[in-house]
Length: 404
Ligand SMILES: Cc1cc2nc3c(=O)[nH]c(=O)nc-3n(C[C@H](O)[C@H](O)[C@H](O)COP(=O)(O)OP(=O)(O)OC[C@H]3O[C@@H](n4cnc5c(N)ncnc54)[C@H](O)[C@@H]3O)c2cc1C
Image (tube, rainbow, N blue to C red):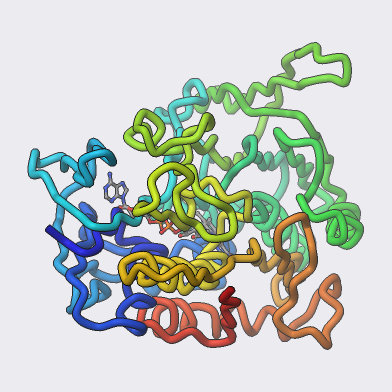
């Protein structure tokens, strides 16, 4: 019997464990995490642009797993929230007083016909896999002329800005190499807008125009023929009709469809879309009061980012301790998420916003829509430190949590 069982030792699982320990020592906490390595995923966009060393985006799990938790190296398989227990893949059953569900989300590569056979070769890549982001950079450097396609799958996806970050950084390199005019760049977005927060769209559109990117909305990648270097898109039109188009490519950067893990979607914890069904402000489960969720697995409609987790972790920590102590005080999450939009190599538009697209900048004296070298410095040099030595060590730099 554990006081707290945490499912997933990613950014959310390790961050929330530290946030709890910071506030209350002595609780019996287990983290269920099958993986032997922990990844700092926000670096992969920079790796794909030759601006970050892939080796610095990964650490052995044992090095980041807190000493005060019991690490159970298996995968969670079946939830029994009415019995306060969970069955693991190794068939063990864990009993808990409270549960935090944060195993991230599923990248659904197989939803695109022909993709798995060709991913990592034939010019087909994705910054959404650590082993492939160096291949992105290799392709960007090699391409001197031809067609470069970039895709974005339907929302929700983690780091909704990452698909277009790959576009800007690749174009920025080709611009510097004076090859951009020989490369036809297309961005195919399954969604209908360039970015979810309208305030940032004009500046992003300016960069798309500067790089002469051909923008295609409601255009969803459905098939890849790697050998023939052909991509097929389903295009949804205003009248609801769908047609398909084919495009030849020399380089194809893919952001795969993303969904909730089936072991969550098929459990009593899920909402209709498969995510852990939590109150968006308290991050407490709607039906099971001793269950909480944060990070990419949660149903809260924030941007699925590590930036969001920095603000969510203290909220869940306060609320779970409050629950275990029989108190009613509640910490409130405002939906904060952050997306450093790397519009060119060396400059970033730092998009930070809360629920309903409300702007929520950390540095209130700086206009958020301006691309800045200062923001690049933060992303390139400081945010990895904030991740490894802040979030994963229980240091809540620049995080203020509202408690009611
Ligand atoms: C290319 C890219 C760029 C990004 N850029 C940014 C950015 O600039 N800024 C930003 O803030 N965020 C960014 N993100 C998003 C950010 O990395 C994620 O939102 C964050 O890592 C989510 O944390 P998480 O703990 O919810 O999930 P993860 O970090 O994915 O961790 C989930 C953990 O759960 C484990 N797990 C899976 N299944 C089970 C199971 N059955 N049982 C137990 N454990 C399980 C996994 O092994 C993993 O360790 C980016 C992501 C990508 C891919």
